[in-house]
Structure formats: structure tokens, C-alpha cells
Image (cartoon, rainbow, N blue to C red):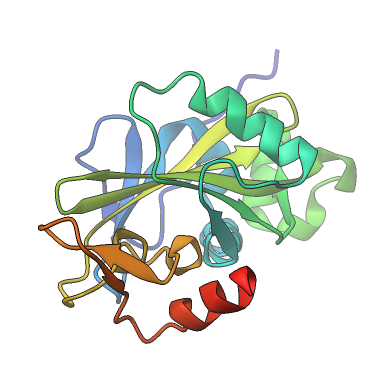
Length: 209
């Protein structure tokens, strides 16, 4: 009987020391990216991780209550209902991915590892990425999932520090610029314009005009 084989060793990054993750990478912008064991069969090849990374870069972040497409929105609501800490933002990527099925047989896995073009096209699935962002102190955690219809498969975790620039909103400091409303609240609870140069103040003014 066919059984599910172990995926090949990664050609980039280093073995992860975090429980539940198999590979870690330190990105040029200072982000530490950890790849989930639960999606290892779908991200074992460097080219597949590159696809997912591109989808992560294409994520648009939203504040809670924002109106989004039904399917990813419903999936995100299901994920959020199971977490104990409310996210500071949720994200949806518009970039579609073509990844191998999670449960390839040993024969199909070997064919795919030798040359992805040899794998039967019916054994690829089209998916996309949805995400949640959390903040703990000065650390931002962005959790990414593969949208598998009725299920969300954890695929990667990004961890980074808040940017140290002064007079910025939490959204801009977390590099989630699209959730910034063009202002921030001081320690004295005063509201002042966000000083980030991402254009958040202009976007907010246009949205409220």
C-alpha cells in the first residue's frame, strides 16, 4: 500500500527550533519566518515556498469589521473564533497558488521531487493565503494559512519587532500600513497625525472625504 513519504530536505533556511515548525528563515527586512510542519508536504520544495512567499507579500491587511469577499472572510471568521487573543488585523492575498496535494503517494512524491512537470496536473490544487496578525509587547506575529475551502492549513509564521520610528500608529509600526487610519494615540491619550511616510494620512483623508 502506498504511504505518505517524508518530504525532501530543504535547500534554504535552517531547521527550526520552534515546536510545530520544520524550517526557519531570516529575511532581509529582519523578519523571522517559520514554516509549519502541517504544510510541509506542500512547501518542501524551495520553488513552492517561493510561491507562498510571493502570496504573503501580496496580502492586503484589513481592520476588524472590514467588508471582504465571502469565502475568505468566512474562513477567517472560523479561524478567529478558535483563537484566544483577538488579532489586530486580518489579511487576504489575491495571488493564487498551484501547489501539490498534501497527501501524495510515495510514487507521486518521487515524481514531483524529481521534476514537478512529471506530476499529474490533477494532483495540483489551486489555493491562496489568508492571514491573522497579532501583537505582544513590541513583537508582531503574522500567521499565514492556506485556504483549502472549508479548512485552513497553517503554512508559515512571521515574527518581527515593531519598527522603532517615532510618532507612528501601531499599524504602521507593525508594517501593516493599510490598517492605519492616519493617526496614532500618544501615551497621554492625545490623537496626532501618523508620521509614517507610507501615505496613510492621505489615504484616510480621501476615504473620509
